[in-house]
Image (cartoon, rainbow, N blue to C red; front, side, top):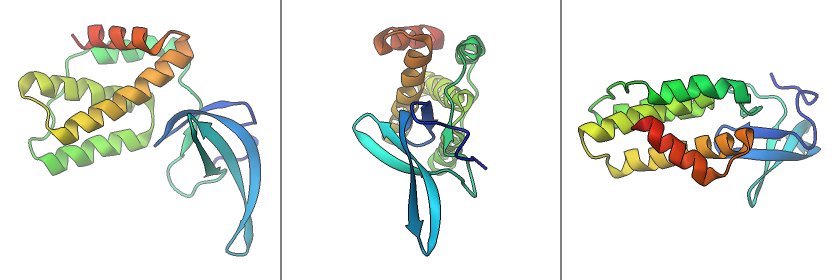
Length: 161
């Protein structure tokens, strides 16, 4: 479980569904007769309240350390693995990877969809997943390595070949 002392106001965090943000406040709210603690996270023009404890998947994490990006770049440049031909099965697999929220899983989604695109054109759903994954990756890449998103995007394109 995530406890409120894991993250502090001012911490840069990654939300599994919304991406890179900053904790701007710790808050308590009463819900169904009990008080719950929340992180108030600002993500671009969106403010969300994230429970400080979660029963299921962790919804917040710290950004990936800069030294781990070398392994991620190797993963992105490695040969992609075939994805299921069935659209629903493919969507379920990719959505599950994205929900994990780890940058490694996001890189796998991008790498494998890029590989899929070399075999046959991606459908609208696959393109949407690819764009979402790229947005997550590039925002974290840019923030952690202190480079412009456009530069990270060019480097990603080179890695994917």
